[in-house]
Image (cartoon, rainbow, N blue to C red; front, top):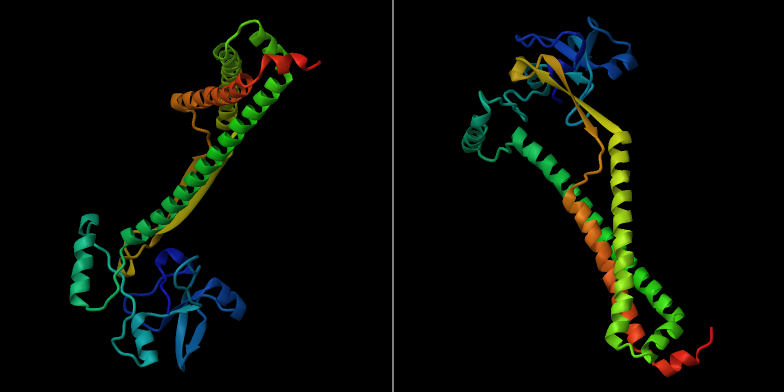
Length: 288
């Protein structure tokens, strides 16, 4: 009806190896029906003695009452029927060969190893991580494109406000190349200063996250030792602590600085193209 291990015992003991008329019950079921270790429980006209209370697992199969396999087969009138078998290999390297041997001897049996379950969980985590990385990349591209567009619009607005100045320079003999170089140079200088400021602020923010970021703690409990069917007789708790941090590398800083310069270049090119189209006569006719 459900799988239970000795590690889940909270009161009393585990089944005796003789497989007598003993029962394990969940703590919730015991509280609801006012049962305790030593109480009598009747199942299909057969009386069983409660020898232990258990906490059902958070996942997988669970039940209110657990009986030895031989008693279950007798009550269900299904002698020799088994629907789940737990197998423990003598060593980790033998798991694959044991799995293949079971599949060969029991045609149609579904065999799942702990490694396959772990791979499924890991695969799900990797998929989630890949989705998160791709989403972050897309958002970064959108943010960079928006920043470039904003810088270009601001530069075009600046050129529009300097029509008279640029027109005067062209009237004094400046070629279109000189005007474009002047606008692009100003934008690159702004991109340089913005890049240095942005890298400094980013590094400071990363240091703050590393110093004051929250820490996550996760714990898991599993059985250990030898018991019925090779399952655990004692609980083992493993705790893992994960500190949230902001990775900061030289390549990341260089990438941010290069993007700032690229933004200045894009904005300067757009502004220079606008300035190159100015005609001195039209520019000089405009009043401040």
